[in-house]
Image (tube, rainbow, N blue to C red; front, side, top):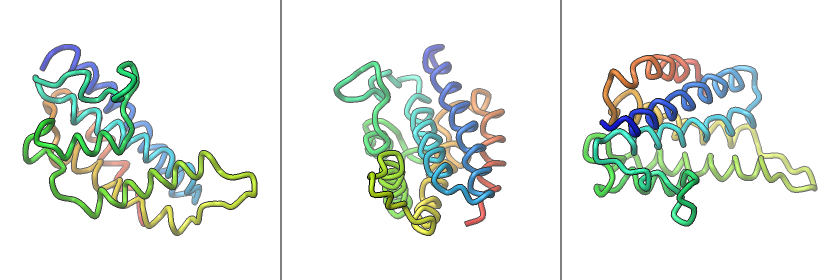
Length: 170
């Protein structure tokens, strides 16, 4: 793997671990809104790590389609991670349609939380809790079960991510 890809993978894994540890703590304390926001950050990091893990990975594989200096949205990264143009099996998210659907629901909930209307309608905690398992399953799949990067690059982060995933009781 190129040095540039190795650095991108490590940064993405560190972000994933930190965000997921924070999310697990928030879920444990019942702060579901923060858990949703942090889990989405963790999922985006996991997708960036997976899409950057191959020797042939290019910065464009994780870049926003219209703004090359920004990371693509989670939905765009998920489409890329499900495509054989970007990832090969078993790393590719070719299955897991239920988990992907739940993850996208969580992203939508996160967007509602961040852009809460002035009338104060809050997102239901039960709705957040029901969408979290999909995102958590994808993170586990991409980082723990079928990493696209070398074990030596991900080992310290994968163990932290595995431990954070185990803290979620939904």
